[in-house]
Image 1 (spheres, one colour):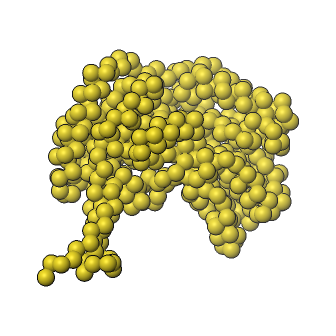
Image 2 (cartoon, one colour; image 1 turned 60 degrees about the vertical axis):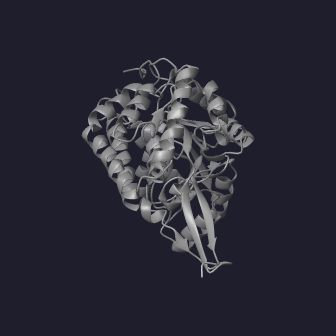
Image 3 (cartoon, helix red, strand yellow; image 1 turned 60 degrees about the horizontal axis):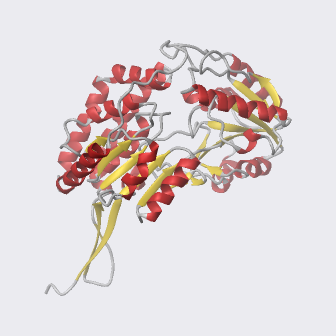
Amino acid sequence: MDTPTPQHFPHFDSARVETALAAAAAAFRLWRERPFPERSALLNGVAGHLETRQEELARLITSEMGKPIAAARAEVAKCATVCRYYAENGAAFLAGQTVNGPAPVNRLRYEPLGPVLAVMPWNFPFWQVFRFAAPALMAGNVALLKHSSNVPGCAMAIESLFGDFPEGVFQTLLIPASGVEAVIGDRRVAAVTLTGSVEAGRKVAAQAGAALKKTVLELGGSDPFIILPDADLDRAIPAAVQARTVNSGQSCIAAKRFLIHEAVYDEVERRFVAAMEALVVGDPFEEKTAIGPLATPAIAEEVHAQVEASVAAGARLLTGGRRLRGSFYAPTVLADLPPDAPAYREEVFGPVALLYRVRDLEHALEIANASDFGLGAAVWTRNRQEAEEAAARLENGVVFVNGIVASDPRIPFGGVKHSGYGRELGAAGIREFVNLKSVCIAGMG
C-alpha cells in the first residue's frame, strides 16, 4: 500500500443539512430529559459495538489514512474505554451541589447546552471523535460530526455505532470545510469543538465568536522531550523514539523537540539515530510495520520541504531526509537547528525528530518555552526536585515525568498558547459543554 484510499461519498446538499439540524434540535429536547442510567446503558452499548467490530473498524482506519494496523486496533479499543469511563462516571461528574450563598438554599446544576458541532481531523479518526462524543452525549447534548474529507468511511462507520441511540442524537454531516461556517451560525447549534490546525482553529473561533458560541480548540503542538543527565537512558531513548513516531509522526502530542543534557547528548544521539534507522517502514497492514504512509502525498511533500529548508538554514541531517515511494517518508533526525530553521518554529507532522544539546534544566526550559505551542511535554529525570520544577515552569497543558505524553480518559487534556484552549476528558471535559446554573431558593417557609 503506497497511499491511503479513502472511500467516496457525496456531500450533503443544503436540504439534507437542514434535515440533520432539525433532527438534532428535536432530539435534544428529548435526550436531555433521559436519565443518566439510560444514557449510560446506551454508551456502554457503543463500547460493546466497538469491541465486537474492532478488526473491521481498524482495517477501515488503515485503509483510509494509513495508520499501522496494530495502532488502529489500539485506537478502536481506546474508544471503547472512554465510552465505559463516562458511562460509569458521568453522572457523578454532573451531580448537583449545595453551596453557601445568598439564600437559605443555593444549588449548582450542570445542564446540557444543545447540539454541539465537532470538526474533527484524520490522524486519529475514531479517538478524536469519541473523546468528544462520549462526555458530550453523557451530559445530555447531541452531536453533529463534520469529519475530515479524507476519512468519510470512518465518519459514517462512527455514526452507525450510535444506531441504538434515539434518532438525531449523533449525526455525521458530510460537508466541505466551506460549509462549516453556515452550520456554526445556525441558531440550533449551541457550541463548537475543533481538533486541527492553528489556521483552522482561528477560523472556527472567529466564526463561533461572531455567533457568541462556546468553543473548545485542540490545535497543533511542538512538544519538548527533556532528557536530564540522571535519566534512565535504557527507558528514555526507546520512549523518545516511540513518542516521536506514534502514528507515523502524525500526532499533535508526539514529542518533536528532544532537549538533551550535554553530559549524555552524544550517547543519546547515537542510540536515538540507530533506533530510528531500525524502524520498519512499509505496508501498514503488516503487523511488524512501525511507520506507514503519511495520510496524503501533500503531507509527505510538506514534511520534506520543511526538512530541506531546515538543512539549508544550517541544521545537521543525521539520518533520513528523503521521500520514499508514494506517501512514505524516511524516519529523519535533525540536530543543531538554528532559530531561523522552519522546523525550529513549525510543527512537523511526520517522522522527523529534532535534537538539541542543552547545558542544564534552565537552558532546556528556555528552549522548551520558546515556542508558540503549548500542548504536551515530557521530562526524564530521577531528581524529584528538578522534575517538580520543570512541571511547574513548562508552558504546556500536559506534562509527563518519565513517561510518554498521552491522552487518557481520566485526566484533562488540552493546551495553551497556539495549541488551543479548553479541556477534553476527565471531569473537566464533560463540564465544557454544560450550563453551570446557580439556583438560589428563599421564601419557602
